[in-house]
Length: 392
Image (tube, rainbow, N blue to C red; front, side):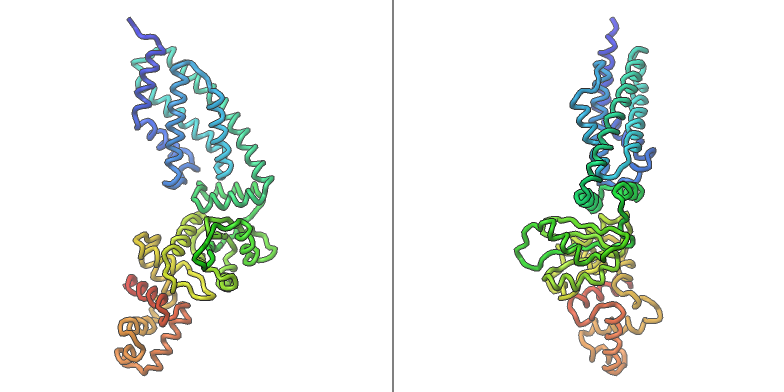
């Protein structure tokens, strides 16, 4: 006695759902064949994997039962489309990902063909065509509606855009450009990212208006670029034109705030810039925060290195801290700095280098001028010491 086709399909369905390699094959194919998904970082792949697992289970169930998409399925697909509109992933790329997934599913079923009849294959093709047609219409409609809503509430749309940027939810620079174009904005490039917080020990969550007030104080009036602001707990996070970094320390001092400004990261690494700034504020000792000054890329990179989470190679960190001192023509200044750090005093360093103490102090002043770091300051001396050590 032969099994009914639905029983054969159910056996294949159970086998495929239980086999984790099927979901991994779908994720791998989408990652390889759809350029937007190829640019996703590791933090986004679990979401893709979860959607793939759910979609696989639902499609195989529809095939095994000769069913159709229900209201709950359509709500979920619309929700996925809305999320993609918010994070800037083009709907065409999302729909292509589903088509790629359908191809992988078909191949996986075909590999089990000896257990299936021709009617089962026709049922699979019919189900996939009908499902892809329905979800294409539903997702395109939801995507367009969400895009219109975001564009209509401009302040909310800009805040959501920045939230997605610092969370790393943008797939590529191209997707970011598309989303910016829909909002009619041009983001600063080059940019500085500033994370800032009140110095007071008791720091309740900030209101978004506090962040926008800080933005107004720092963002240049007029201009073609759009600066962004959002809040993370007790901190304000701002994306500004690079020139705004020059006033950050002054504005922080006026408000009795401290901050970290990152200026050396590219537009596709805004999430990394935010992580560097946030971690720096979390780990910097109190004496690293000088009045009228903010922590910089160099401070943040040194702190990340000390925490065992380096975000750049040692030679890059050394160049950030030492700046022109890394040049061969200024080796005498680096030697003076090294002698000062090793000996602990200008007089002892002068004796070690056979220099007059005034000559040694002059070289240390040049170190300060060229690097912006005073070797007499404990925190600045530590960063200089680490930089010359890892450079060697």
